[in-house]
Image (tube, rainbow, N blue to C red):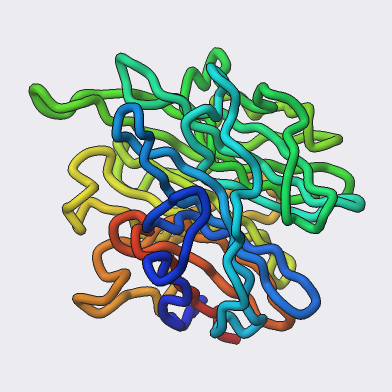
Length: 319
């Protein structure tokens, strides 16, 4: 497969963001309408109590050619979770899909810990106004830690095939301190679950479905699955579990796997066109891909350097 980079299409520093958020437009997720595309993203505000970030979900509406911004949401699409809930301190990412007469929004919720920095779980919110606002189905998650997936369940991508909901997500395998005095870093892999209704899920418990390329300390994030010519293709990002924030050689890159049965996946990472020239907005890091159809085009939204601090861009799959 060959991709063509079309450049950065949204820079959050050039727009007024809701809820006092500044910079960051992470994990872009598309909802295609007849005459425009709505792209949800996670942006950040500063918690006045401790100076730490809080991630909120907003959206930008764009022309279908993804060259022109129509407008940015004036508010966030749903508030953060209640005190003590799984999404009290942030929502990132937020995956959307149409179902029945509404839009389902799968929440990757963040909450702070003491011994380690964070815990995550997956919840569900539903929109009845075409994805303008969402309401949770409850304050708790629909997918969370379990005996063989003890922490860091997040990054949901959901696709309905036939009458079955399939979810690809990540689960943590370890927290480790890689050097003396450094904070613990997390490692996570891609897993799979299925459901009849999108609410009650059955995991393929503890099964890593995409092989490692970098060894056991590879972290894999944000799977995105699309069918092309009768085969299922997954794009995701991966990195080393330590020294990845400022070292480009260890930071996020885009990976690829394919499957003919949605169960067994073969990793290839064989594609062209996503290498960026030195000094470009995505030259040091490519992360958080979202692949979707827009008319007769197959497009990939993704973040660049510094985990999407300065927005997201798009690439197009060439025929």
